[in-house]
Image (cartoon, rainbow, N blue to C red):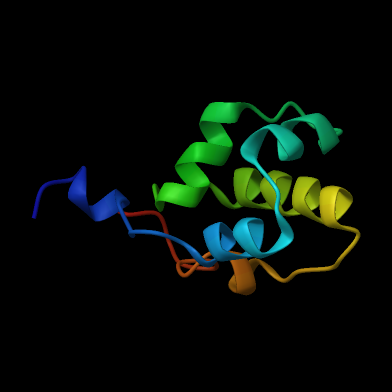
Amino acid sequence: MTPDSKRNFGPQPIARVLQERGLTPNDLVRASEDQLTHKAVSRAVAGRWLTPNMQDKVRRALERASSSQYALSELFSYAGSSPPT
């Protein structure tokens, strides 16, 4: 297994949440009070490993855009796990 493949977790639950809510990555970027980029949101949806801090930024933006509360484990299948080595 290559180091890069260890960082790919496949489509994440956040993709389903965005679709169900009719939200786009642009909606999250606009709703964010942090410096959140389209690239970060795209990586989150695609399942590329994000740091816990970046996962939290994406979660906060989603909460602002959707007016709902989410746990990281509801959005990321790898939430709380150690970084891949």
